[in-house]
Length: 193
Image (cartoon, rainbow, N blue to C red; front, top):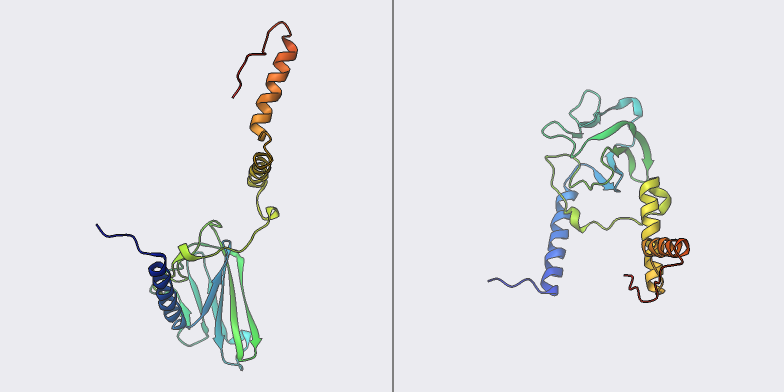
């Protein structure tokens, strides 16, 4: 029975995987980053290119970036986008950089709870389990999720202080109310858990 790898072996394997991914990503004609909600892509172009020279198409499952009348620099022709996007919320701009110009494409994910392993399905993947998400704040959450997280945080602080959680407090309050409504009953030996 094979033993599980030691921490140093795991670290070496992770380092090798990162190097392999970096080499694969470096061969792509674009660079990309992502958050849990969106994907940003930059495609370098010559300094003399103007917006009217570009052919950029953004569709729900397709993306094409190139120069008019020429083969696309980046195209989902032999594969689709990794996941669906919100077309109306996705944009592109032509920006001047120190090295010339680049087309910046912002894609708004449909599923805002999922990491993409790649931009185009026919391109090399990354290990999404190794992604460290950016810090988020409670204000980023929808109302229901925010309420649940705030309750969990409150309960955690209560436990650390040796006090009852919100659910335990609710039970204690109900018991006190019941005792007040029924003073004839003796609760002195009752064990409440």
